[in-house]
Length: 86
Image 1 (cartoon, helix red, strand yellow):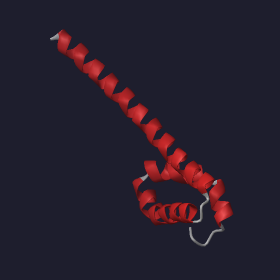
Image 2 (spheres, one colour):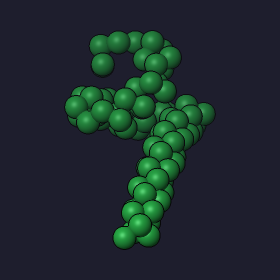
Image 3 (cartoon, one colour):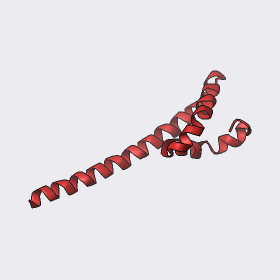
Image 4 (cartoon, one colour):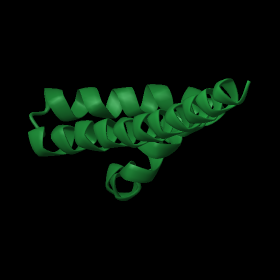
């Protein structure tokens, strides 16, 4: 990743962060690069880019959280239905 121009990688940043969250094997590869880029953004006062980075990560996590809550509620509903049938 470090061999690609930053401007090229920036275009794919939302997808990279999404893959970082959802794919463990990809996360291992991307972790150091994404951390390095974030530190560079903050230290060079590229606040708008670092803010964008945080927003992307935040909303990816919120999306996953909503899916887990939906799944939990569905499972709980089935459990309650099964328990009332007994």
